[in-house]
Structure formats: structure tokens, C-alpha cells
Amino acid sequence: DADVTQTPRNRITKTGKRIMLECSQTKGHDRMYWYRQDPGLGLRLIYYSFDVKDINKGEISDGYSVSRQAQAKFSLSLESAIPNQTALYFCATSGRERQFFGPGTRLTVL
Amino acid sequence: SQQGEEDPQALSIQEGENATMNCSYKTSINNLQWYRQNSGRGLVHLILIRSNEREKHSGRLRVTLDTSKKSSSLLITASRAADTASYFCATQDSNYQLIWGAGTKLIIKP
View (cartoon, each protein chain N blue to C red):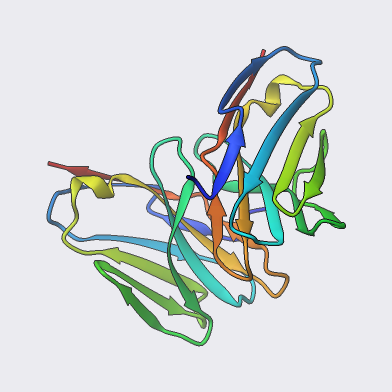
């Protein structure tokens, strides 16, 4: 089984809809991250969490919120989706150094 | 904002040749990491080099780090078709966050 899983893998939605992306990890790590990737660009950090009670904004948190339900679960919400949030979204987890990534969620906002 | 830049943006070589890609960064780092991403999939960690190291090897991979020039290079020797992917460098600072380059797209021609 994969160490980091993301659901859904693909999602098409309409402008204004609320969307939740979910992430689970079995690595036992405290740290979890949400990134977005746009074509031709590297990863940009949306939110990160160093433990269940610690949530921090990343570079591009506007329009997003997160919830850390447990050590293993970290969800990302788009409260009111807009077309420029169309992107590939990755969840990751880490110890102190290297990060382990999920397979990604391809989100399209029409 | 992204920490640094990768060069070249794209590289196409014949199978069996060596591939070299470069990464530059702007601020002090604890370590620099290289990741591979197959088309549209999650990133996979390849190798980590610490700020006090100058060179590191892992199989067909060789990474160098020059902290005075704030640059790193990744060399893949004897390339294979399976090496076709995008390669990203990421620098880790004292807050343990990773800051990503925009990546180099590598194509290995049979």
C-alpha cells in the first residue's frame, strides 16, 4: 500500500463550489504539507502542519483552508472554488528532511 | 516565491549519454535535495546533500554542491529511457521547509 494516499485523484467542479481534498499517510510522521503545481512551475506551499495542533500558512494560502484531523490525516478545502485554482495538488509528509509525496489530485474548476 | 532556478528548463539526449542539470539558490540552506517527477505523478526523493558536503553519489546519480556559488548540479550517468522525467531541486532552510525550483524536463531518446 502507498505511504501517502490522496482522494479524489481527479475532480472537476464549478466556480463557487466547496471542495475538499483528503490526504492520509502511514509513515507515522508528524509533518504534513499541501502543495499546488501549475504547468511549468515548481511546487508552491499552501499550508503545512508540524503536528495536530500546529497549522501554518504557506506561500499561497489565500482561498484555501486546512484541517488536521489526526496525525495521519490532513485535508485541504477550497471554500469557493475559482478557475485559477485549477492545478495539480500534492500532499506530502516528512520527518526532519526528505518528503514523501502522494500521487496528486488533478482539480479542474470550470 | 521560488528559491532558485534550474538550468536548463528542458534537456533532450540520447540513451546512454550523461545528463547534467543545474540548480541555483539564493539564501543559506541546511541541505539541498533532488526529486524526480514522472509525468503528472507524485515526486520521488532521489538524493540529499548537506550544506557541509561537496559531493555525493547514489547509483548512477552524482550531486555536487558549491555553497560559495549557491549552486548544485545533478549528473545522471549512462541515461536510460526510464530516466525521462522532470527533475526538481529543493532547498531546506532552518525551518525545515522545502523551497522548490521550477524543474528540468529531461527526455531520453532511444
